[in-house]
Amino acid sequence: MHPALSRDRLTVPGFARVEVVETSPSTNAQLVAAVRDDPAAWPAPSALVAEEQTAGRGRAGRSWETPPRASLTVSVLLRPRVPAQSLGWLPLLAGLAVVRAVSDGGVTAAVKWPNDVLLPAADAVGGLGPYRKVAGILAEVVPEAPDASRAVPGAAPAVVLGIGLNVSQSAEELPVPTATSLALAGHPRPDRTDVLVRMLGEVHAVVRRWEEAGGDVVAAGLLAEYTAVSATLGTRVRAELAGDAGVVEGEAVGLDGTGALTIRTDAGEERTVTAGDVWHLR
Image (cartoon, rainbow, N blue to C red):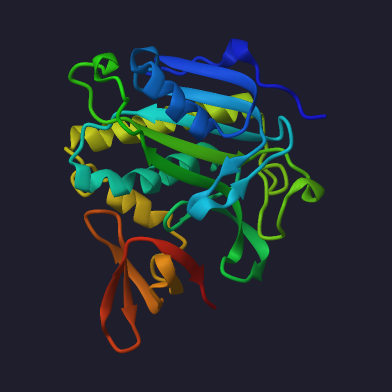
């Protein structure tokens, strides 16, 4: 049996509220509903954590379910004071924050565009190269509440950032062979409480730097830091575009001001990908 989170150690500097529940169908859906119902009860940044998630959602509607107390399923309420066109960077910056939180004791994580965190593996698997997925990220803008009188005056639009991180799962507890956990990767201290506190602290620090730079990732120094831990940039990739819009194949060469991926095709054309499944090719 996996141990529970230690409520006594869940103090995160900068966070107004960190709430832990035993079970949730989806922490993202639950937090979105709670913020719409009572925005003042969830000042930014706040977090909702579930010991077990039974019907979580990943990107493109995929399911995200975890064994009880084996992973971290957390949703963070943010109100980033950045231009709306910069919000596409939020899941990428969250990936950078997760990398910082889990890279420890010789375990070095990487980000896969747009919303995955990877750990090195001994062998290559289709679409990931010599990596396995340890975390996924999903960002959602919270719709405005039906009752405008309950809105928080002067507050920036609310965004819920969901993070699912595999911490102590065994190989048998993982849903797919392309996944891994911190424990399986040899992380020296895969304590969920410690990892959660570090991860939330890193999210807060990264977002604060981003805000202070007015949403400019270059001025904040975050583009360079993201690039340094990217497993996608500089790699040959195939992007399957959202909505059956086709496929783009070539080298991933950069990111634009909105966080979109730039791919240079074999014909020398540079294509911008804003959404879709990206596969790393050998």
